[in-house]
Image (cartoon, rainbow, N blue to C red):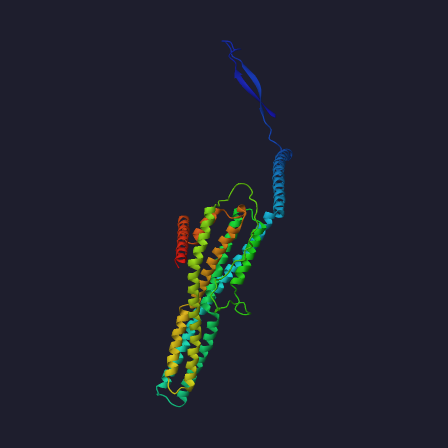
Length: 430
């Protein structure tokens, strides 16, 4: 602090008399603060601010160390927990099911693409063969009119004969592979793989998968690969003209457990004697009605497809020979026109696809029959699927409600009992 001394002359009334006045000097000092010196004060400010910054950074560092240690601890515990899960049977089953799921998704994409490709084959081959046949018939008809002679006439006959021969070869190859049936096979395969994909996803979502689930999914994938192969060469292609109609089979052989196991507890798992009888009646109805109908229709479609597959190349072959050895154009024109009609009926009507559809329907009812029989033959009720859920699934697969399914079973039982009574009465009568 610096002091500033000031002298003030003041008229002091206290010391003045009436007759005279005197002036008194007053000395006072005013303290003025000194300005800080820069060289000495700046380091103090910096030191205090630096100290505060260090303290704040220390707080943040402690906090960060705590957070990082906490996160590292959680991460370590998560890794240990995941490692424990990985070593368990359930997690191994889940990992294997996800691996199978990836393979199934890849097969869905492949079968879808191959199905579209073979459907295009059917359209392109149908149009190409019909164009060849009709063009050859037209040229043979022009050659038979007598409007041209010599070299032009020979050229028309040779050209029509070559076109008929090419159409014959293409028809033989097309009828052998049946593109419409190939496309239907791939569509069915894609649909069944999607069904398997949904079932695996449901198994994972419900939780607690087992090794039997993994083994069952793997067996179904292999069975589908065998039922619907993609290659055409090397003997892998399905026989398009079998001796007898048989339903398709895309599921593995079931392992039946015929041993009588003791029930654990008193629960019947939704099953009863009435429900078992109902399921047996459903099997009888499927055998007596649906499977017989589809077998009959499948045999009809097979015979029609065989007849059309033989007729079309035979007609084009006759037309080719008629162009070369026949004096008039009647034989090649008529045979070529009939060949176009037969080819349009066979591949335009997709008779091979209809036959494959009947095969798939027959296989569906066969699978339904085997599923019901395998479930009923399982003696341990706790190993069966829940009875009410099983009944609901069977009703949905047959396109009925649960009440309609029960009504169907009761009508079937009454019809069968009535039929037995009539047979017994007839045997007694005669």
